[in-house]
Length: 259
Ligand code: MG
Ligand code: MG
Image (cartoon, rainbow, N blue to C red; front, side, top):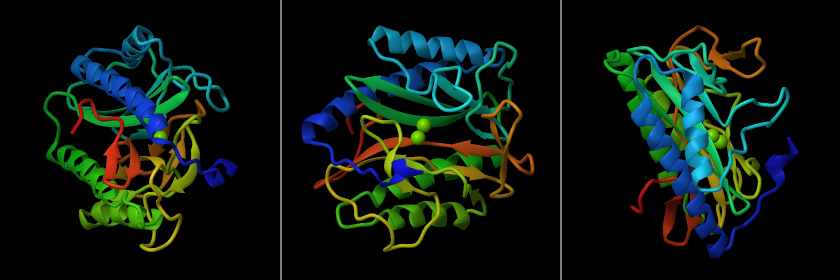
């Protein structure tokens, strides 16, 4: 994958544009979270996402991406589906599901990329713990996004947090630099060795995205060519933020409000 070697340092002005993109992306996710009730279809969630994006004159880089071209603006991945689920008018959200929604926003030529996993109604204690561990792993990784650290420090922090709680990280899908392209260097796996990998410098922007599985690190792709599921059918979760490395520390660009 040659995108992984193309690392672009962003100027403060570019990071400010990415912050605007990130805020719009956060508005999409907040809107969808509020709509997540039993009975809504994943296609309806996609339509709602597109409405918010259109209101801001934006679009998602997901649509048309890859091969076969991804047909929607968000991915919706439920329970054992880890990532890349295709929205469908036939797929209804049910009580007790955990629903991962990943969205991207292109604003003034820059991409923001983030994901949340949300429980619908009453969810099992295991599902609740999985959500907390996956989101906790994201923040453990973000905490390492400081000048002088390396991508291996970020990866290792995510891996250790997840494995200390008895769950598994995927080996097959990774975090990534993000900017004018959705996927730029450096590649940031959810496992790694402290002190290894790319040196983090102010102006690097990386989408960190722990993808966590309850029972295995193995996945497979369904016949639709996109949907990634856990190989053993166990529950999975995914959280993602687009984060800038700054002199002052990590800056989360896809937060809804300034922190
Ligand atoms: Mg994403
Ligand atoms: Mg991503």
